[in-house]
Image (cartoon, rainbow, N blue to C red):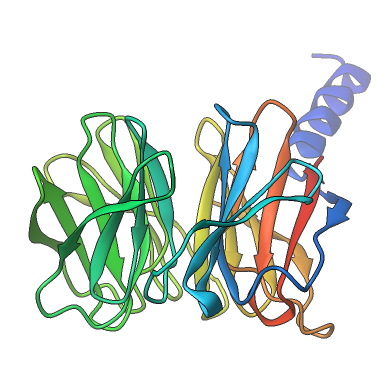
Length: 266
């Protein structure tokens, strides 16, 4: 191989390896309507965002510009956090139960989790099986036909959950792991600041993770990661995030400042 061609190929490979991603801020919501937003869930069917207003025990519906559609879409919840839609129902993690809400915002039932310390994130797979993390006990519970069971244990700070086909991705305080259907655990990435919270898929085997203290990480397919944003100095938190893959928009709740912030992922 001629030297100039070799150098050209080497340069291309290095550029791909060290490609950096970035965020461009699009908007932020007001700080009046939402009280302690712990989770922001983008819903492609309604083209809106459902925010767990943990401080008021309610769910606030926003449009895709951050304007309020309905301030009290659901009320009467107990420290509601991670949420997911499945088959026309909205599931959200309360302190010790999973609340199930219909499309009118009415709580139709609760699924109690015995021995729960602080339920946090929630994900539903394609078969309707619900997974919910318990941060204080380091467990992940699996709910099938409204019957909960302990699925995983010994995950310090168990928090963010994501289902992809038959795999479950689990974020702990400093860990990011994949669990297959046989419950075999594989490390996805490491070297994170303590306080990991949410997880969203960006493309095949690429993700963004949030750290509630105010950090956003981009995780590459090879397991390496980079800091996209560090807003700790401004005391802007980054809690349970959501992502619109069509517009490449990341929705970030900031619990401490009572806002949702939208970013374009570049």
